[in-house]
Image 1 (cartoon, rainbow, N blue to C red):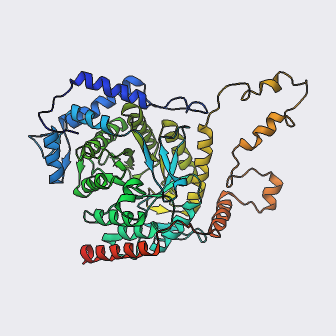
Image 2: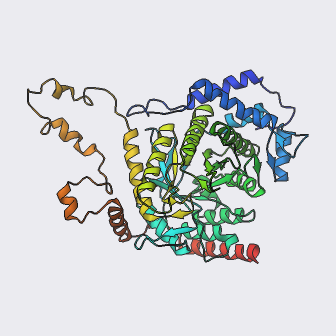
Image 3: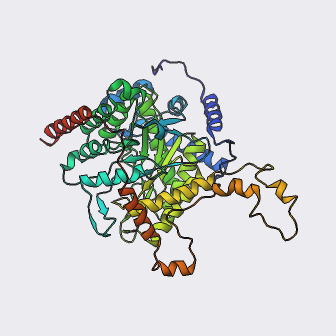
Length: 513
């Protein structure tokens, strides 16, 4: 890849035509078992306008970047300094070059290859991940709230290992350790508790390197890690249109080690973003596209996962919300734009609630969110188990979110129309007053229906005989069953765990002091 200023450039119109064609090729297609049904707020002309405004915002306003090395690389690539602020303007042609070079598929590798995730999935379904950043924990037995501690990572990991819709796990914010290195302690604990892919969320600039060292050690060294990166890393914009040094450093080191990047925009409508969701979505897209360019100038061409996580302010109280109707509109719009407008693998909240506890509100909000964003085309639905606007983790809620995910993935697996799916032979031979219960066709397909483990289907007499047990009681029973299962075998070796512990100690010595 050449990023010299004097590189011959293709005309803007031709470039736009090329990127449009690439986007069309990346759009969802017919798959082996049918079509993925998609919902979108906007028709093609509206998506095109949002796309153009996002590109124009980067070209006319630009972004502020607190990372001198990256700024110099951007200037060399063709960015220009704004005269009225400290931003770097990113020309459309540079952004489109970066988009064209960015992989439109990603494999999130796990320690156990059986849990590898290829995205987008060919069958049109999605994967899920646990909530991140939560500093509170709701005890699944007592229902009491407390601060989330290091030992709770064991519970979250063990639970997530056995939730079939959860493809990878993020580390929460843990107490009982130095706050400034809580991310390092959390990842070091999590990496030894699961076979699944994990993601990294750095809390400080210096922490990035230590997080990378931990996952490299767990993989057995740099070479095996580069072949199969068992972690991905989030980088987040500091809205509006600014990037802290820590997040840019995460992008730089992700390119160094070959990690996929979750390029995350975290706008809050009426706070750090416009109150109107189309305006917030334009800013979201601009911030994500800026991170595509930041990664591009480092030349490794690692996969970028567009991650719009939209919030809004409750203007009456000033509290942040993740489940308001406006937020649900915003994340759906953002997913539609990043998928159909730019062809990127897309990740957003598909679970979670503003409720402080599991219950009817939490389940309703999670159901609304997961259905809307899955139909909008999201490849990853995040937030499993999170409550109170992503500040609390609940194992009981995680089990119910997992069940919702299973239902939706079943729903998205549409069936082709043919003689078998229409039961044509049975339909044309059925006797008047007959039934299909004993049909061979029914026997062939009766095990293909989704059977919930938590949601209830019993009759009134059984419900009363069971003392009116509800879904939360069923989730509690699933949790207790999971606790009895053995931990995974594929954990780091004793030598690797020793090396990881030494890395954590070195981080505390340097960063905490």
